[in-house]
Length: 232
Image (cartoon, rainbow, N blue to C red; front, side, top):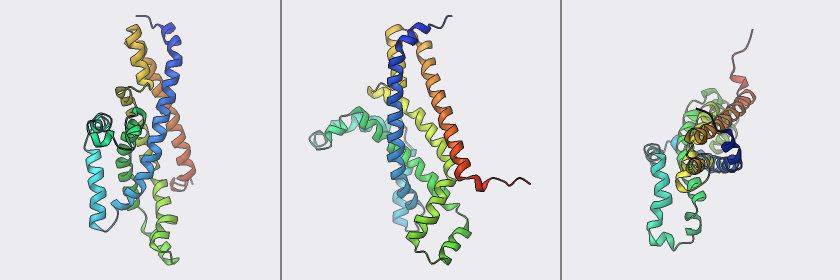
């Protein structure tokens, strides 16, 4: 079997366009997912039963259902309701890009919220006592001590979530978006060369994964260096 490099070279602009789409989907999903996950994570560690239960139910439902089902419900399911089609939100909900970003953001917010909640629960008791000794209010203690500390410690787990979201963006091709996987599907449909088409897509994902892992390793060395064992 001979790998047809000529076809891949001719299709490279399509793959590069798909790369930009993948990066846009990933960046927007992670941004809005993280913004939603922070209050959800705080709710998950709340001592108020109703607050805690509401956040738990959200994360349980989202983590307990497949990402593909959530994407289909948002992109195809909402369109069946006339009230949605006549609402002011329809210009956004009729956009494949918006629906994909919304579905991915909702999905990652649930997983990230649990990561943040776990990191908050693992906060050393000494940090809490020190904040109280300084006379900080509960709000100020969370804003200046607990939440920044928890976010730093959550970096290793969050890096795994980011990598998983990168792989998840490949589902966007199912709702007509030409991301990296969508580019591979287009090349395969045109030339009937699945091996070349999907191997190239796999190489793109491997390169992106390598870059993300390196970036998170740098972030961990910068913000988690104080947790590393001291060398004697």
